[in-house]
Image (cartoon, rainbow, N blue to C red; front, side, top):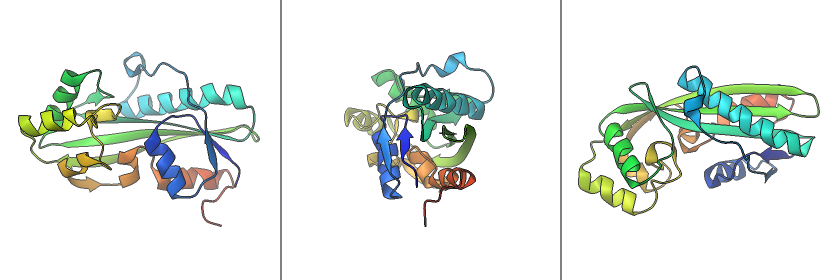
Length: 193
């Protein structure tokens, strides 16, 4: 298995790659992640950002595999990215309360050695419990709501808000591992040997 360059500083993506024992190093992308400037469906926007991240880093490494990913939350056709501040986090969690939403991760894998680019996405449906103001404020105060699409971490304390998940759990955390494994196999790489 060739080494992967992860174009992200996300600790969750790092943990997921470690979980499946892939060799990797981290070189964070330096692109502006402003999704509002992109066109297309939410899934296409997530794919575009994943591609931009991978392309940015691939311009610096020149060989091997570069992995870019971007996760967004979509509810009622509105994209929820990372919260800007406390009030933004509150508004996001209020919107998610008691409803189903989509978690979409765009994934881009660039094989610099063979000049191949793969871009795909994974969608998972997440059902939230009803959240009262007290619970939302306490969660935000914990600090976990920040730096996460939709203002929650399903792998952290935010798990108590998740009533159910339809689809890939690791996608909700930040990187769909089954999708990544399929993409690697298309490049003649295998997670399991």
